[in-house]
Image (cartoon, rainbow, N blue to C red; front, side):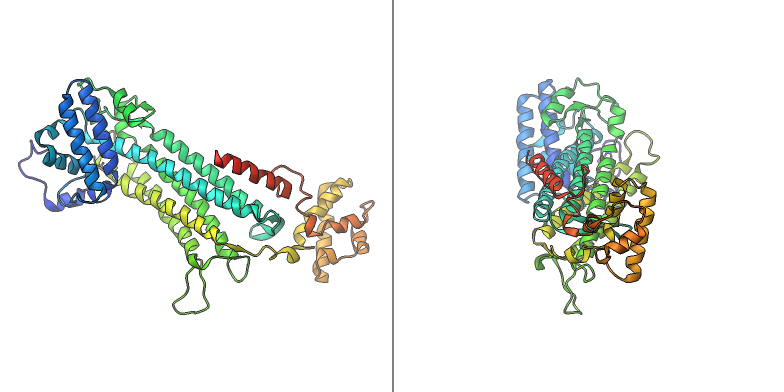
Length: 460
Ligand code: ARG
């Protein structure tokens, strides 16, 4: 028991089980040991512990770490409030009275904040790497499909042709922004709260720089009250996971569409699809659906914990304990979703010719004719109107744009001086993408350049 002195009864068993965080904060075990090693080393440095005492504490903590990792020690949530008290109690079992000196000059308030910050740093770094791996996979697929023409949509209506590579590169960009959000979280978490005590620092001459440095924190928090009360880094992490999952959910939705009988564009490998227990012909994109579904829970975690924090007065309140489950769940869900998304792309079969014929002469090339007329000197609004009439004619004739004759075009676009065969060539899908001039467009040369740039950037 960590705080027995002023109590005449121990905590009611139901109350203990209700309030214990051990079943989930056991995930902070290694961080907690690291923090305690740094703290006790600092206590020895300033002469509060002898070197022998610090040594004893360290070796005890190392034993606990080993026991935890090889699962010979499993702290019992029915006995302890949290991982911090479970470790301290086990340390006492191992090294005796010296363990009572470990908690000198600290509170579980600065301790749990330090643990969680270390956990956040470690996991955000790993998440960034996992995102990079997905980006690399998308680039690999993109590289094979710079010439695979697909319809680009707005309002889920065919808008203009693009390439599959270009489409995937859009996700590479999104994933890069996800990494930036996570980097922000990492920097934010990189501040040591150790030495802030319960809320107001300590009368002991604790060396905060020593612990911060030993644990690899970039700096110390400057206000103890804020350091103890601050869970912004958790909120930002939850938000970063939410935006990241939102991106994965959009990609999942596209995979679901691409693999449908209506799209017939993509086939997922058998090892990432499932069948139906009733309909023998079914092959479902369940993993994509699950990523899409799980994103809802991750958003809920972010909003849930934001609601927990609202109205909490400074500094520590036990409500803070509610930070861990949503955080661990969101980060785990995001991790596994990224990995599964990568898996889906690894064995993906893409029907690269699916749209070539269908988009040849398609209405989605209409803008190209309008642009061409602009270059002939026709004001864009008028060009837009004229091409609208061209589309209408093709629609009534139930034909494609490339099935119209030059005479028919001339009749509509009579004010267009010099309309000739080159106008009809605009409806040829094979040159549609290479006609794009602007930076950031699906021009295959530009897309190839982008792929190269990304590959270089991501291998650094
Ligand atoms: N289990 C607690 C948490 O996760 C640890 C800190 C407890 N601090 C306290 N003053 N009761 O927040």
